[in-house]
Length: 175
Image (cartoon, rainbow, N blue to C red):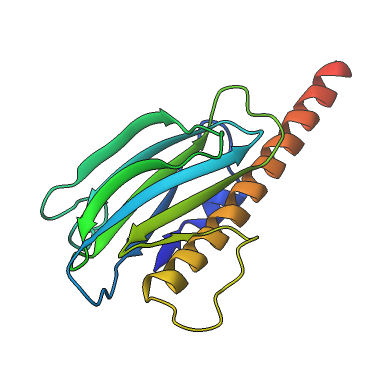
């Protein structure tokens, strides 16, 4: 499951934050762990706060207490996966990402990918990854949906910020 405030995303300014909640679970044939990570590539700098809750969020609170995985993190855009958390295959991980534009963000696009690794398999969500024809784990559709949404969100945010920066530059030149 993936939830974000798309109205805020459509009007994002550099000082704004978009909250994106993901629910990640696995249906493993044998006991094991699921590692959760993030990678990114692109031109626009992003700052991310990442929290993990093993219960359903109660608005802004995690009933059992959230674990801060990253705070004020300048998301690397080197395409390398950064591990965020590891949970058991029986856990339901609720990942909350708060994403904002980083310093100097004027134009550009940054693609953010979420990774889930477990039971000898790796699922990486990005638009160039075709779906396997059979045998999908329950985590795959969730990650694919979430990844597609975040990629669209980030692209829209970068375009809006670029247009606003150009408009501000043009209005400053005519003064």
